[in-house]
Length: 282
Image (cartoon, rainbow, N blue to C red; front, side):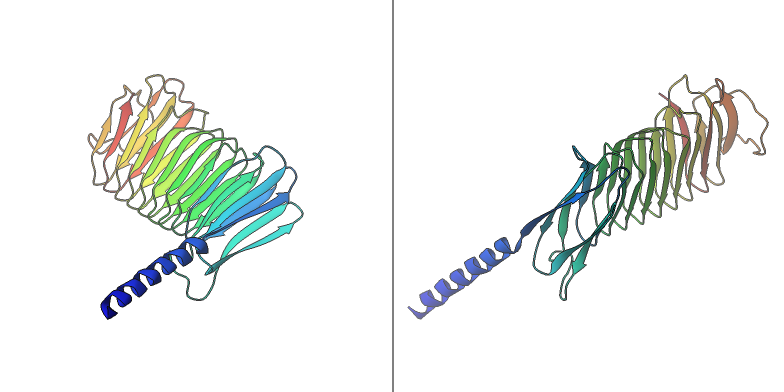
């Protein structure tokens, strides 16, 4: 009899604990009236941030807090909105987790930071800055703005980004660029793999550099490029019939090449120390 009572108490305790965990999750919503080219920043130690355009001149922040070990601080001054996850004593990666969905005017300038992410921004045409450690970064359907990404080991994917200045810095994360073009596209990674699939359009400057990672760049047969590729200790391959050009680079079969295609509207530089480089024809 005593054993049955003990088991019953344990069951009740477990159910009660489950109830506490379930009810600890809190949803909060904030509204801020802004004007043209507003500045919006969100800093979140643990958890995702997803930003997309709103229907009017308003910033709407929806936050889901996973426990009472974290609070949402916010400041609002003129045309600037700042949101910060404030960790309280005893918070960890799970209890300090906050999930953000942020609606902003499409022309807003946005800064996002999360150590673990993921970070996602879509359908904007203001400047976007995304920073994380292991955060997965996903940027898509951006036009005309500056895109700056800094990560340690998180993978970075940009899709349908046009007419913008793109600068990506990563230590070990892989970087994938799909249909990305503009006046400046610059990627620098220490050990991550860089994959570009586009047309090198816009008469821009494209620089893809990695120390030990591989580079794979795919372009159509009509690409208009002035290209230079070199890997000090890795293999270099080229699928295009390039026209010779004068350059400071000493062309060497299998490790370096240079030349032009079409009117050479865009400058393309593919550089690695020990990684493999392949310029592929689509």
